[in-house]
Length: 371
Image 1 (cartoon, rainbow, N blue to C red):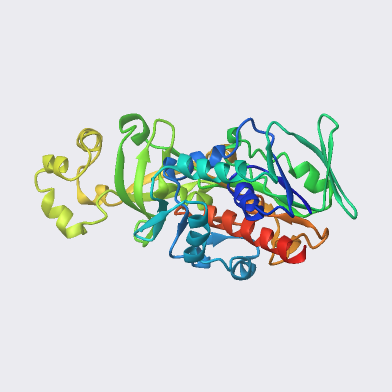
Image 2: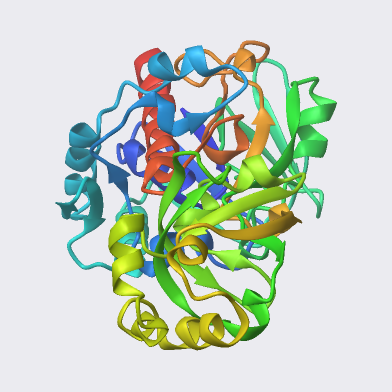
């Protein structure tokens, strides 16, 4: 059986290593000059592979009721699949990382498995011009060369980090095939704000809580990074989707301290240096009212979010009604679609990589069952 895999990212590579058997002739096609570029920057290079808290409320989709059936592979089972590729893992506070703490080792081991399989070929710098589907699936390159496959797995990514290769170019072919999709939008992106913090506190990192209203509960909590042109960090990425049209957010720079304790600690304003980063403390002393009310409810005006191309993941994509629970196209049997190109995106913490791996394994499993 001839199997084509379009895309040499996390999902495509994971799908490929499921076919290390001589009865399958597998070709991986990718238009980039190198495989797994986005995988290398996952988790700031540490590669957060999955999360032991795999609850469906960590994901967004226009069809969320499909998610449970689409994701039968548990974090524990995924770790066993990774073990087979010598990608050994450990868990810390629910987050699962490779023992090496390096995304590069994950990529090297997946590529090694492919290189050692004589029936799997990885072909880079291959731009897809057209896909035609009948009894077989014909994939035409921009140079006119045509591959003929029995089955094809599309693992082309979305539009986040487009410089790594996932630029959404496959959507023109998807549109031609009549497959429905939602336009890609930013998700897990920095937030653009109008605030003097950017000028005075650039490069400051701090643990914060963020509220949407002054007296509301936290909508996010974690590390904030103040940049010269935006706010970023996991605490920001996880809420960026709700600020695409702007608004206000309220930063608690002392999330582990009550108002009462903060007020006591700030009897002497200079005590702020014992509570927060020096640069932030200096700014607050010089430009703000250095009191607990400000430090625990600092108002920031949001003007929008950064473009989808710089996001960690993109929202939108092929709607879930277009696939079965095995990720096979309902319109074109034999065609499978997995990973970020689908209308599913998760919060930070290993959720998006888990979804990519899960879909790849499920699609490969279905092909093997039907072969």
